[in-house]
Length: 153
Image (cartoon, rainbow, N blue to C red):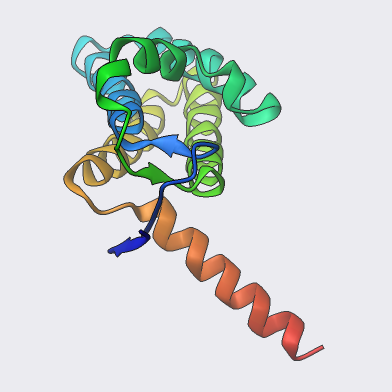
C-alpha cells in the first residue's frame, strides 16, 4: 500500500526510513537547534553539523541519531510506513548547507545572520514535524523543473 500525504512519499520499502525513526531524528534536530538559539551557543549548531555531514556524504549508515532512534523505537517500526530515502537525503543536504552557512556567519562574527539561518532551519524542521515538509516540496519542484528543462533540450 502506497499513500500520498501532502508532499511526502510514504512507502513500505524497508530500504527507506521508518516514520517513527524519521520523526525521532527531526525532534532531536529541532531540540538541538532551539537550545542553541535559546542558550546562544553556536557550538550546538556545530555539533549538529558534525553529526549530519557524514550522513550526507556517506549515507544513512552514518546517522548516529537515526541508529539510536531505530534501537529506541524498535517496537514501533514493524508495520510502520517509510519515507523515501532520497527525500531524506535531500532534506539532510539542505540542512547541512544551512548549518555550514550559519557556521560561516558565526566564525566571521555575523552572529545575527548565523542565528537567522539557524531560525530558518528550525522553522523547516518544525514544519516537517507538523506534517509539511518544505524540503520535500523543493525536491519535487527541482525534479519537475529539471524534467521540463531537459525535455526542451
